[in-house]
Image (cartoon, rainbow, N blue to C red; front, side, top):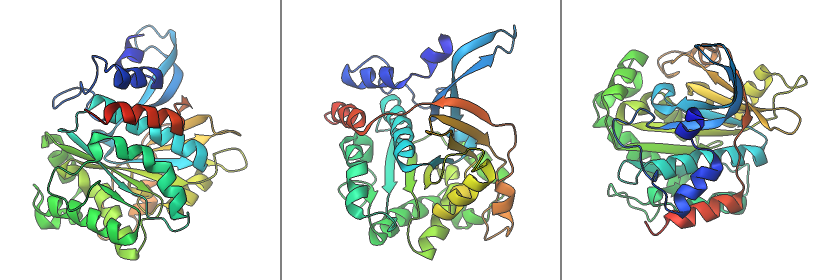
Length: 313
């Protein structure tokens, strides 16, 4: 029960926004669960007594993982992404966390992408507060994506690792990320960002971004993992759909015939491919066993109601 209270489910997240409840924006600098997101629940054994605990939240800490990859069939993938972003928006104040959306994948019509992400525009975390030249921190075409990524690259160039941040070793990035005390940026990269240059930049951000408090959530359209489409096959499809996916320190793969289960896999940090040609292959190797959980997912209508509740704040 304490763990479920620590990481709220979608129902409590919505109530927090509608109230607004006492937990609204509770996770500031120094909070132990800063930038930790819940992906679902699983029955797990207690570390102490060994007793089976039902419906324990399964989480990923973005500050440890660096970036998070989500892969699966589009409908369920979007529902999981909405749940993740709503948690972050409810528990982190706009002064400490901003969102940037890059949804410039031409494989999907722009009208479809606009409709899917329209709810996000109500969130105060999407409003520019660093002097960015835009009304909202979104990109639906390559020109906008280039502008948004250039803003992030400038922050890293001026950050603790300097202009050569992309070549920094994982240990140096991790040390800088640990020292960073905010504010933070979560960049949602939905599919292929566009040009070869943008793919390269986004991949570098996935690895080096945490040094300046920048963490990516990468979405990749892929089949759910099943006996007919094992994990390796889903990862290969995700890698082709979202070039930054191999550089995410944690990935969540939707699984099962109707994609109601998620496999959460943590992976060892790697350098970007520009400095290490086999980085993508190394990134596929898990650093531990997968955790299988019943996935958290929310509808577009749920997300719209949630975001509109936060809009005036």
